[in-house]
Length: 152
Image (tube, rainbow, N blue to C red; front, side):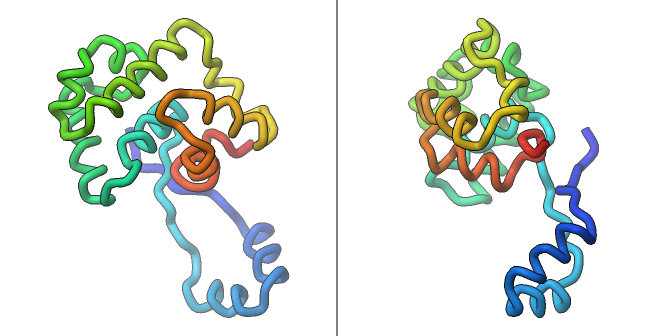
């Protein structure tokens, strides 16, 4: 999959610059920021679970090991692997079980992940934080940073 970046244009830049004079100076000085995103919401959610309370370097290492183990990070591929095998990628057993639970809910249809981008933020946060291993903070960070699939 090709690397994708968060998309924004002059309208968004002007809005931010008009909201805060100090931010306007920073935006002018820094210029366009190319923020990598994960356009697949399930993969972004799994990445968020992996990254909880560990360094970015450790998160990246674990995610690369998971990709080597399962290929694409999909509900079916995560569901097909035992929690023990996921744990061997370098995560806790709790995180492995959380990921398996999310995959299972997506597969069963209990979690309609494709519907989330059309919902208000409060509903997305409520739905995601109802999952084991996903709190409000993780839901909010998922909406804010690693995934543009939630931005409609």
